[in-house]
Amino acid sequence: MSAVRRVGLFGGTFDPPHLGHLIAAEEVRDALELDEVLWIPAGRPPHRPEGPVAPADVRVRLAEAAIQGHDGFRVWDGETRRAGPSWTVDTVRALAEAAPQPTEWTLIIGADQYRAFGEWREPEVVARLARLAVVSREGAGITPGEPRFPFHAVAIPRIDISSSEIRRRRKEGRSIRYLVPEPVRRIVEAEDLYV
Ligand code: ATP
Ligand code: MG
Image (cartoon, rainbow, N blue to C red; front, side):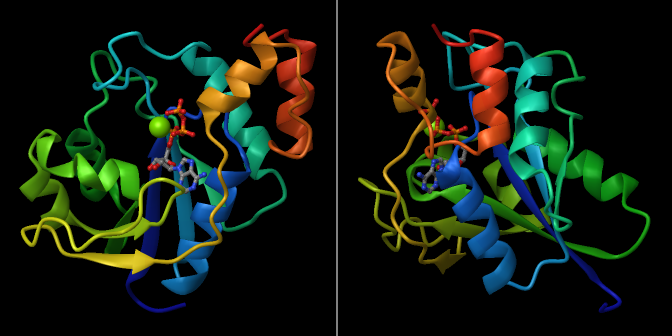
């Protein structure tokens, strides 16, 4: 292992986590040779006035179920235990201050999120503390974007799955098998989530 630890930060509502999330996190981990990727379920996503559907503790359990068996992935539940909106800048600051060894942080975001990055809270600080890795997403290609915020573009197999689509399917009584990892499907079905 190199002296500087390389850690990916993958934030999301994960309501629920799906194969698109897993592919994105794994492709960036591999391409940028990260030692670890922290999956960070948002407590209260600032840009979602309607809020998440499943409670934070359930989304943490779903994220844990999603990454089961992968040594390079870990769930960090710090945002769900903090009061108020989950600003990424607070998260990166908190992690950087608490890091036990020199760490290079990489923030992993989908192309749809990068488009709005300039409107996040203190984006300059986020971009100074962490390098950005942007993954392509169906309907949102990677464009050069804001020159203020340079990023690593990571091309990943396009997979047109979203949590909204999974929730819609549940409402319609349709199958979500193979769109989410099996351990996630088992919890979603056993606990009647999103119906
Ligand atoms: P929702 O439909 O509820 O917004 P989502 O599928 O977009 O859910 P989020 O939790 O909002 O999932 O996303 C977390 C991160 O994962 C974001 O950076 C998002 O761009 C990225 N992401 C989600 N789905 C995909 C996908 N299919 N391919 C690539 N990136 C994705
Ligand atoms: Mg989203």
